[in-house]
Length: 94
Image (cartoon, rainbow, N blue to C red; front, side):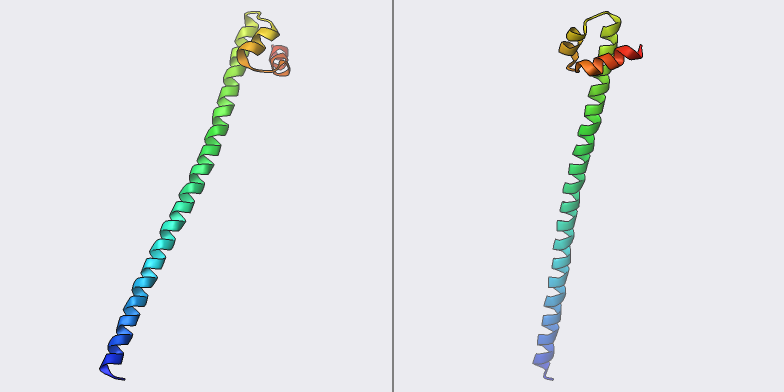
């Protein structure tokens, strides 16, 4: 093997090493971006579910207080947005 062939092989190995490192870096960045996107989506979904649960609990608490003040079911429906079945369930627990 000539000195020129040896140098060419060395250059090709170095090019391969750099290309490989670049591919790994690119794939890693892409994987992290995908993971972050999925994590954000899961966080939003969980956050929305928690928010809805807290809102519903607040509505039930308000309905309970309004029932104690002897408001009508219709008035409580209008104020809280709860349906009659939900309000009657609270009323029957008293």
